[in-house]
Image 1 (cartoon, rainbow, N blue to C red):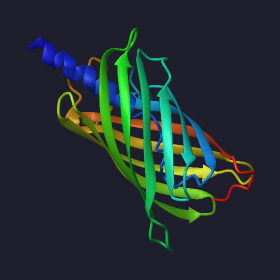
Image 2: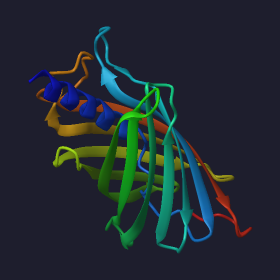
Image 3: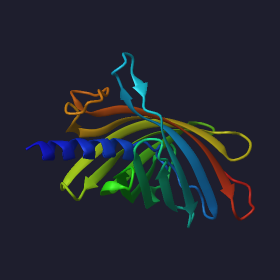
Image 4: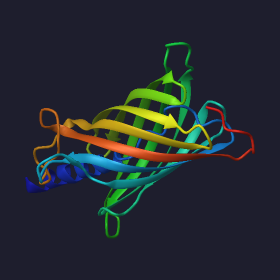
Length: 223
C-alpha cells in the first residue's frame, strides 16, 4: 500500500513543477514574431513560517505561425531534481471587442522526470484557456484555467490562474505577474513540504516572467 502513496506524492510534485511557467498564451505573439520568456516562481511553501515561493525557473519560446496561432516550447531548468520539456500550440478563438475579452485556447504535452537519469518519467497532456482584457494601454489583465491529464493514473488536475502583463513602451520587453491555484483537485496533505493551499487541496503559487519579443520579419512590433 505504501508504493501507490509514494507514486501519488511524486506525481503531485511533478504536477506542481509543471505549473511553474507563467501563461504563454494570453494574446497571440503575431505572425513571424518570436516571443521568449524566463519565468521564476512556483508553489508557496510554509514550512519556515511566512509563505515563500519555490524559485523554479522555466525558459520558454513561442512563434507566431499566423496572426492568431502560436506554437511554443519550454524547458524546466534543472535547478530542482526534476527535468521538464514541453511543446504545444494555442490560437485566438475570440478576438477582443470593447469590453469583450480576447479568448485564447490551446494544448500542450509535457515530459517530466526526476533527476538524475530522468527517473520515473511522466507524460502529461494539457488543455488551457485564458480570457484577457486591456484596461489601460500596454496592460493586460487575464484569468484562465489549465487542465493537466495524467495518462498513468487517468486523473485530471485542474489549475486556476489570474495575472497582469505589462509591455514596455519601447522595444519588445514585457513583465508579467501571475497567481495560481495549482492541482486544485488533488490533496496536498501527504506532502512532506507544506504548501499554502485552500482546504488542503493542491498548492497556491506565484510566478513572475520577463519576456522579450523579436520581430523576425523586421517590422515594428505592435501590441
